[in-house]
Image 1 (cartoon, rainbow, N blue to C red):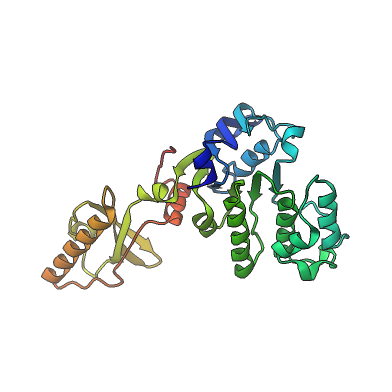
Image 2: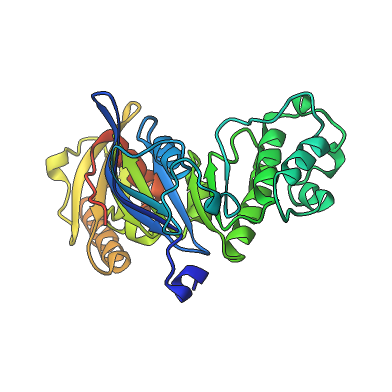
Length: 322
């Protein structure tokens, strides 16, 4: 159980947020909350409104409609009572390229009343050996780690992470996940946006998927993928038409084209999805044996976050937010 669940506090509150640019409404009435000690992932297609939402919560934009609060305070204009409690890793670094890594961290430390020690910050983000290197000479992934270090040195109670692992290699990305997870365990409320779905699967207590300014799915990972159902698929045998496919209990079938091959796909939904899927496979196997038909490339797998995300992006699976 997270810190937020124990205390019942709310660190971030978004209620019917709307954000418009002239006649274009980038965010169309979204709502969610984040508790202390919880990581909430905000996912979505390009232009879905994720960055606009974070910029509003960071206090850079006044809402066109609705309300946002951080610890009960309106963040617009970054009021003094929030400055020591909130920090962020933005999409684009704002560091001075001619300063060294150590000088950059020290500059950030000078702006905080009780910062972490320089050596502690550098060790935390794996940049100890880069202390004397100018920022301009860092790789993209190293710059993102520096961004994270300068955000964490203030020990924020709320942390906004906007694509924090962009440009990192897999090893650095996983090390960064450990840092973020430890930060959450320490009680920080984290709002994360990312294009790496595995990142959200690994880190998020809850998540929401946005599309065209609206939240189309929200909840825990299990809640979000459960409605998608389990998938049973195999290559459509030669001479078998879609009308020839058997009806399987608790499932619906369709034929999908993947390259130049046709696949028979069954989606199993409802309570006890795993049990239903096993029964459907048994019925499918009985059908194939009775007709002497092989089931090439037969697979059964649970729904994934990628399935839900792509379904929303394609407009093929209309989910309703909690």
